[in-house]
Amino acid sequence: MAQNATIYKVELSVANMDRHYYETHRLTVAKHPSETDERLMLRLLAFALNAEEGLEMTRGISTEDEPDIWQKSLSGELELWVCLGLPSEKVIRQSCSKSKKVTVYAYGGRQADIWWDKIKGSSARFDNLQVVSLTPDDTAGLAKQANRSMKLQVNVQDGEVMVSVDGTILYISPAEWKSAA
Image (cartoon, rainbow, N blue to C red; front, side, top):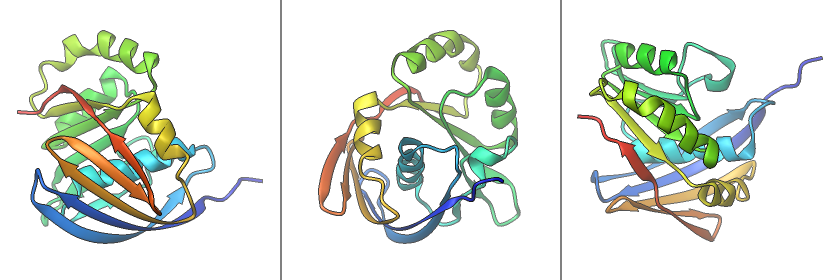
């Protein structure tokens, strides 16, 4: 018998001084049975870092042809495609052809470094691709804070990220491996 998704209720307050975005989002997030706490928390962080009106979580891990997060225009065009992990070159190519901007949040330590060394040459041709790396310490710290009912505060200033989860504060320094034009 298949396991059901676990539901998380999240109050996510974003104060992004770099983008001048300040808003609180009340999210109901389904954690797929095969998804780790680390990946769930990365989805929430990626949502916070890209927060804008119209940004949505998708079915993500359970669907191959959808990103983890996306933003569509009022006419249904894909404005932003957010992917977590280490997607193949084929997935990156298809994503970049479908959306105006694609952001990949790579994580996994040494595996992420090897993935980037392999893919960076072929990804240079995509002007709409941004690749951001997160360290294993940062993602492990986030994973420890996962709770079925959370209040997250994410503050972004000068590219540095402070995450407060129910009173515990984490400092995260995403490294931009490739920027979108």
